Image (cartoon, rainbow, N blue to C red; front, side, top):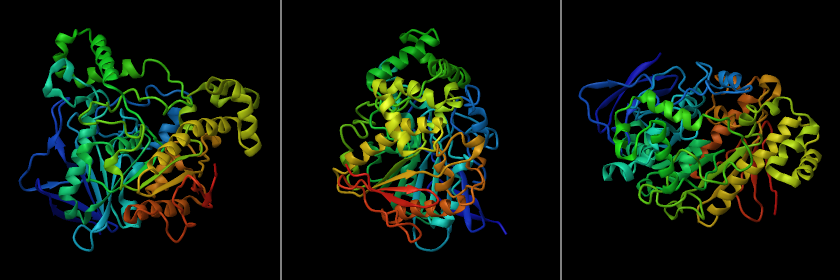
Length: 507
């Protein structure tokens, strides 16, 4: 039966709950920060603090309000509690908390630690989403899993030092500083939970993979992690100081404030600041296309010269992460999750394929469709569209990062997730975020996955591969084919589906 377990951290004693062989410590404070300022470690407490409920999510806009096409239905299947990443929990600016799942907090050898950075770009999401609750991965992989909440959107990435002075230096990367502070908490406390602070893997998907990339280039984070996994978020560049300055001007215009009164941003309500974020980033429908990762992102980390002095992977990887092995990849139909908001996606015909692709490929659209159609003759027009766009964005971006990382000594492994979901009339194929419940081995909890007969088999194998990589830097294990390192000569890529196989698309 479940029982309470207590552990002592540097800030005080925590009480979690053990159930089915895994103890969860939820909503653990790792830091605190005034609005826009750099975070500080959480204050100590006396007595025993219960850690049995998730902490509040970072302030964010409800994704359902601006969803188009089939996205409302998709969101209800991705987030079955409420249809939003917040999953029915509260939002507060005081959101610097993390969650820990451990197979045994009291005895046994120190286990690998896997620290998860959630997706949602840099504007929404939470470490409490059902798709990546860490209990199953902790149990099946014999690892300690940590998920992190941190500041997002304008609260985490609005550069104010030029307007408000040195006290606000780093405000454009406050959300990244939160992540670094969380890793410092792991270094200082995870041994109390049975984890090995000398064997920490950071991993994330979508915007979470972008967070992994940027943390790999943060001087403050050097030495705090030892392996990295990037899933469907191959960000190579971040915004510039000039981009951040334009963002600040836009925010002030929305509030009808001159720069001389920028301090007013400290006093407006959380809701009003979210309304400004909505006006700037949700005002017009976004057209998703092949150039997703070719330019700097809109609201997120900034190349400020201090917190983040270099681009993550442009022109190359950060020297400080030279010895950090990398596992990187994408899904076959990554783009389908975003394209399904486009009215053309739902009704796309074979004749319309070249037309929609001409926006990205110009005169090469017809030839590209012919080549892909010959290779995938039975695929629906909409999934073929998403496959092509995914190759041109997520997959090419992942390959570019992998090949730049090859200039360093650490191993690189590449994957392509090909397991599909049958939901909504096979609308989405192997889409963005579908890999999450497989990596965390929670496919039975998330309706988004569907009811395929082999789903548990794939989840068991994938979660074991992720845990094996965290343990040794090599994702191979006995239930999958041998997984070769990625190289320019062979470009070995593990295709993850009901039948795992290694593709070698040589140059």
